[in-house]
Length: 176
Image (tube, rainbow, N blue to C red; front, side, top):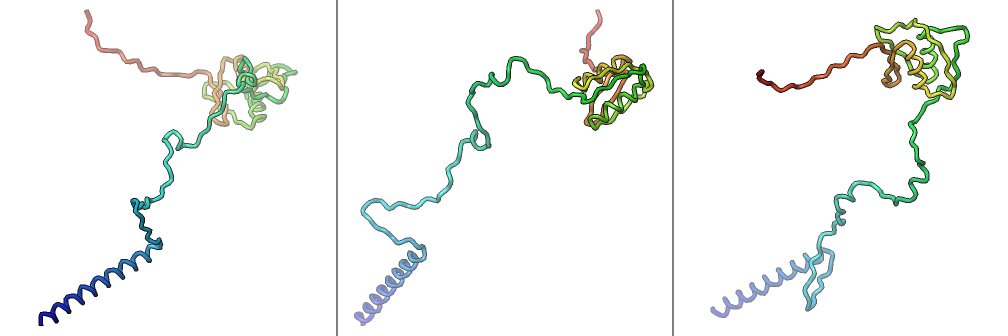
């Protein structure tokens, strides 16, 4: 009987090793890569990630060489000027301010807004050439009546007075 138990135990051990070895072979087939064994160390495949750029290169930008930058620019820098584009002259004497300002604003597709303290019917002498700077021509025109202008978007705002409030902090002191 001892021999029968030994035979059963040996056959069970052989069957168990056969099942586990078949499972290992099946597992290698599922991976899709054949198992390569060599005497050297086996390389473990690492996940492939794109290399990370340093932070200064992560935003799109470019650098150019400083090649003769002063040749194109010149010595003097002038501000951008908008030309009037039409000659406006008062041949029959001074004109009402509202009429001249309306003509100037219409040339550039702008509108005119008047402050409440401005006399729109003030008479001004007009002599504006087509090649004059647009905003300088308006400044010269309004200077005749002591007015000034501001530009907000497409609107020219004509004003007489401008009140500004300044807050000045004074430290508390004791009198002597």
